Every structure is written in C-alpha cells, then in structure tokens.
Length: 140
Image (tube, rainbow, N blue to C red; front, side, top):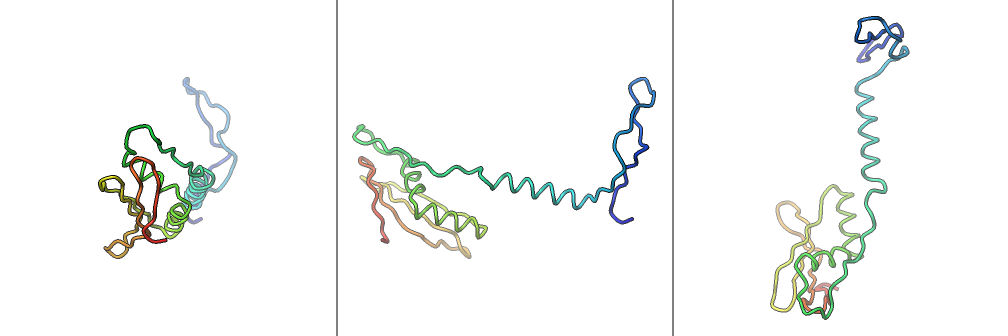
C-alpha cells in the first residue's frame, strides 16, 4: 500500500477504567510526506504573506541637543525607498542586505551592501548628519 498509514473506523479508545469508548477516527489514508509538505507550505504562506508591516520612517530628533545614534542612522537609511527595494530584491534572490555605520566627526557614514562570492558589493554609501539627520548619498 506504499508509504500510507491506515487508520481504521473500528479503532476504539478506552477511558481510564478500561471500558471501550467511541471510535477515534473514520477510515482514511494519510501520506506522511504529503502531510509534512502541506504543513510546511501553510507555515511558509503564513510567515511570508502579510506578516511584514510596511517600513515606517524612524523619527530623527531635530534640534534636541543630542546626536543621532548609530542605530537611528541605520534605521533611517534602511527605510529609504531604494534601500527597501534593494533588500526586497535580495530576499527574493535568497540572500540579505547588510547595513553598517561608522562615525566620522559630525556624521554617520552608512554602507548598504551585499556579500557576493566572498567580497562586498556596495549598493550605496549614505552620510547622515548627526545633528540634523539630513541624508546625502555618495552615488546618486
């Protein structure tokens, strides 16, 4: 009969006292491999469909007297439309984008890149002013 498990209609359960109870399941054939694949398909669909909210721009503190943090600089760059599109393209291709920032005096230098064949391929460099949050790109 192949890789199927047969569940019979005359299967009985017993309660704690040992007396027979009602049958547990009607007669059916279950293919374990098909069941696993269907379960994984449903799980993947639930994971990828509608679970990721649209990116919301991170507010940058302006004139608050304190510098923008490294995390805030990365987040504001990550939410730029071209970076969102770049990340989406890489996810569809089965890889991920990397975003790093380093401090340079009055601004954060943020690199958006992917790793290909053991080396980095830069998508763009962004400069984020630590006081104002103004962003400029290296490659227009």
